[in-house]
Image (cartoon, rainbow, N blue to C red; front, side, top):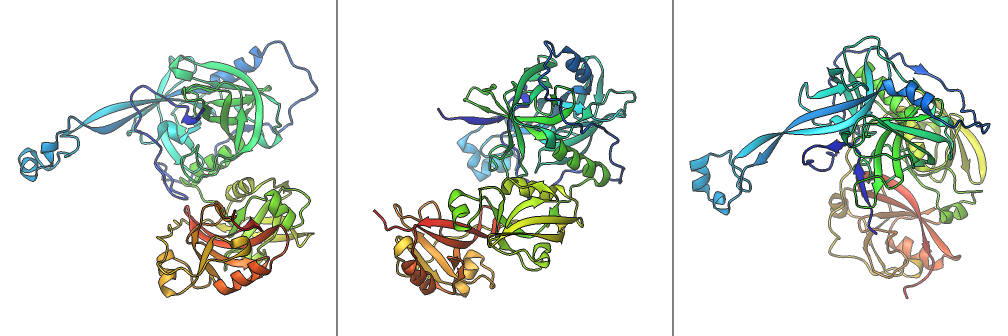
Length: 511
């Protein structure tokens, strides 16, 4: 059965659609003055896992409920009144007015309502929620109702970060009941958690479940963009309207912000919910309050997952870590001495399980911070120090169509792959920098071993850890390669990401 991902903020009227893609670091900012980070209450004591589970969670709910709020947002949208093919006529458009949409008649406006949840984190009114709960709201269009559903405030949007789907609001109130923040690094699969929010607008509700998994990444399917995903997965029922609400442990500490659900097509909970870890949300909040924007740490490496095939090629003990597929010149990584083929296994003393987690770790660290990396190079562990830079805003281009004059097909493991030598025309066409040397992939035939591995427009720069200059080099080394697999380092400029990565191809010919 086909599955669908849906954001969990309930909508009273028709939704506009997917969230807008905002780029690497686009941040909606309302705050203009620098401020100190919110003074939140934090408890990083590990959960008592001695097995003492009570017969009621009422004490936890009573502790948490006053800190969870309902959020109502209003946005004005333009909608067509009618459509007629006659409105395509320039004369009619001149008569009725140029502001008439030929596909939808004279535009009208409509108020669209959104529903979600939020969590009070300071006594003076700072609130954490999801960006998608309040995105696009009109000025003064965000209302916050306390848990008693009697007291309502107009909220100020301090700032939002689409890349993590975190938003910070502020209401002018004193004596509120802030929640205690936990440490999401201490969570373990199997821990009991409760989700508190306003599902379907029925009022504050609580659901119970466990942590089903940690470090979940959807590859952009959940956020709708290439964001920073390190989700907590839970089976605690989360439904539309829970977005931005609290995910708490059995001691009532906030460990996550409810974000989205995986459904079976019904739009309702199917036992797979996702929450933003509170450590990530708090780091974003502190920057939004202090600076009105988010600056992220930058190392300057292209990283990729360690697959079973790559672990074997690099003689690694397991599949943990982040494989360095490329090092950008003039970056903190280059200055620190990182090299292609390094596998980073620790970041500032924290174990790196995969490349997605490592990406979040670096981004979550303040620019100019000094960090320690433990890595495996040529089968040996070593430690290096680096000073992070600031992640620049950048958009990668998409490769164009295949060149009209491909070379002869390669053979061996690359049977079915056509390669071409790089020249100035092809570099312009595919936006390939002058420093990238190798063979351009011009065609990949169906049924070949490289199908679903290589793409047109990519450049093979290494074969079995040896640099290549042109298509002949690649063909020669592929034909002479022994073993079950061919290890390639490939430069790519696709999907908004530019740099090199390692891939393996089964050493066989087409069937």
